[in-house]
Image (tube, rainbow, N blue to C red; front, top):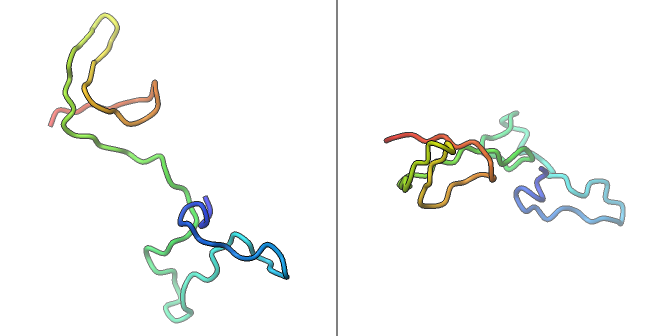
Length: 86
């Protein structure tokens, strides 16, 4: 996504001669001749691995291949979940 959605940039005017509306402007000074790490630039976000600790397994139903877990499990319904014993 762009910088307006991802980082909340304000953008530029939509009229009066503005050529760029949803662009991030410059990426930094000319001196280092590189983009500084951590710069707020457009890009993909989401699809991140989320680890939740401390959930309790309440019941195991082997006939239906189910685990009943107490607590919130991230992800969509029907999504893959990896369970590890720590």
